[in-house]
Image (cartoon, rainbow, N blue to C red):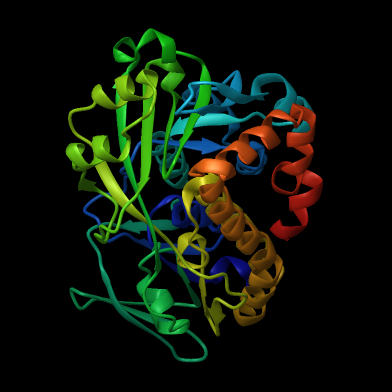
Length: 398
């Protein structure tokens, strides 16, 4: 069987699944992409895309379109939300770009998804099914048969589960139960730039670190919007990530912060919220002709801003391994997970650590501030080079 004759089934039409569809269709494969929502679109607001993401955009031929939609901060700033002091500022527009060869960007999640989706539209060998929930699948040894809740069946040479944190594909091949609830909740909203208090209207990715809470805000869409994400500790749990937030609880959790933070929080009347969850890292997320990708394989807390980036890296790596497999999908999937699991596990665990650092109180807060103030911007870049430096991560892309 030639490479162009392979049929691949992808469950999940988010950023990871749609990047996989785009990458694999470019190799000539026939792709069936299944999304349970009524249409292919992203909910949510802004995400951060580091230099490693821009390397991928170059590989996918999407850099110009992404650049036209993104915002590029001058600095990455950490503020202390109790004292109001600036703890550190990293010159993103100059130093990060110079050190890693690619920029640090900020983009609306829907804009990124739309670019990827439009890219898929150029390939007649991609069929996209929305409003289509997968009920089951079976690996018969020489193919995979997928069944939808409406009773339709589709047959492919392999299946890729890109169906997120609550992945039904993962449940069948990994059997590790529900995700780990972190005890943190995130509220998100966007503001028109004219509604942002002047003191915060800065072309920067700004993080206000506080005891058991933090606020992040940054510009989107060329500075026309500001993205806000407020995170705090809470025992509340709801599955999914598009529920309405409780403004009263939010303000209670941010008691004692400086006016610059409260002014931003007070500007929002309606918040969307999601409970932050992840899983313990694993090294095996493939079985036979079935594999996982993105949050289905290695869900992570958002504190390192790498969830979407890791999903896109997965997609490119997976496509590379399949291209070199001569139709042996089981071997390709093992090679793919072996190339990826150490890097993704490091991101998962580092994200947990960053969450503790952001939410530090008392002596730990003082230690955090002293450590960050004592480190140069160049030292910061070297500390994160394992994540952003092409020479360090290219091997994990296969």
